[in-house]
Image 1: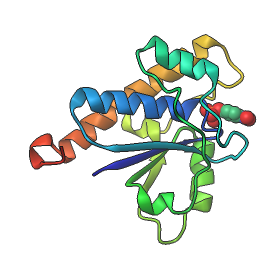
Image 2 (image 1 turned 60 degrees about the horizontal axis):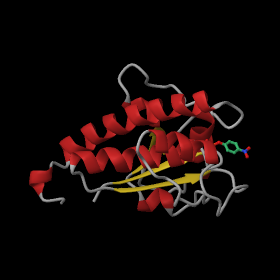
Image 3 (image 1 turned 120 degrees about the vertical axis):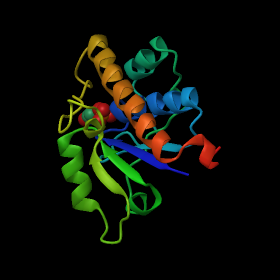
Image 4 (image 1 turned 90 degrees about the horizontal axis):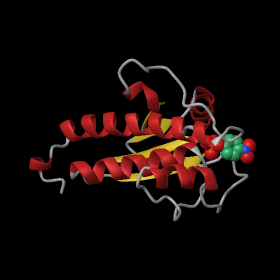
Length: 161
Ligand code: 4NP
């Protein structure tokens, strides 16, 4: 089964939103995939998503309240097929800790969105509710694009369900 790990800095704003968006998009598409998220930093380990991130997801019909933050670890690069960074600093940090025997494809999440390749999802932590809605729109677009890609490579008829 295809597996995707989203990585941001704190694992309480952007990557939990990406996780929620991809879970919802995969469910809509009938695609069975493993989805998780983590942070490069350890400040929020064990904490639920930021209240504003939870609220933004809820406004779009997705419940992320049960997620808990964790820090990315070396085995993630072996366990997941795709390790997707929310911004370019996260990507550099991931490259710096990726073990030599890592097998995951490590890249920017927005590389999956036509026209947005190479761009970062801005950190909404010091922003407003409106910034969290912008984050949601970005990760939702990426989630839909990901489901399109993964769905084509692993069509339901191939027996992944
Ligand atoms: P995230 O946002 O990386 O999208 O989860 C942040 C959350 C917390 C902090 C920075 C970014 N922080 O510095 O505590």
